[in-house]
Length: 213
Image (cartoon, rainbow, N blue to C red; front, side, top):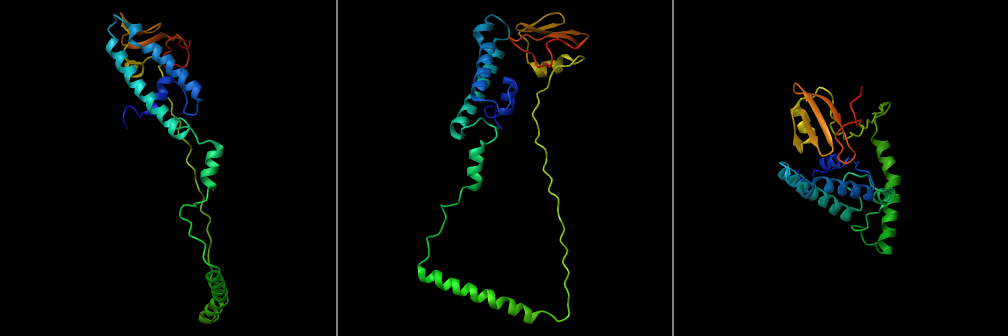
């Protein structure tokens, strides 16, 4: 899977589900473009990182929109009800044979009637006398595996700097025990995450804006 078609990674960055609407998908993309655009980070050490991340995000977004144009839905989204019903019940007309002439249809009909009458007689004549055959029918349960959900990793107190870096990426600014991600920040003590603040303008990968008490 290439970077452009890693749609799970794309949904994780945009923080949307595969079944979201196209408008919600576009709004989430525009928010991320505004966040990672190099013009907003001019003069910082994270210019190259922001440009690379924006380039990959744009490529993934373009692949997803191309998929939507060809299939009428976003990658990973369930088929519309009408489309699924059409695919299930649509007759296979492409390989349908041409109708047979009336004479052939009548001949086949009499052949089928003759076969239906003679087949049971033949089987009865060949069947051994006084022999009872028992057949056992077993019901095999069908198990349907539950659909796996895609959940992005989130920050937790006690994480190391390496673990935070793997989730949030390179910070826009590093201080003494404090990393900044735009208006959001995380704080470490002895290489362990002890506090954070998640701003709506650049939300962190967390479940709550502040750590639980």
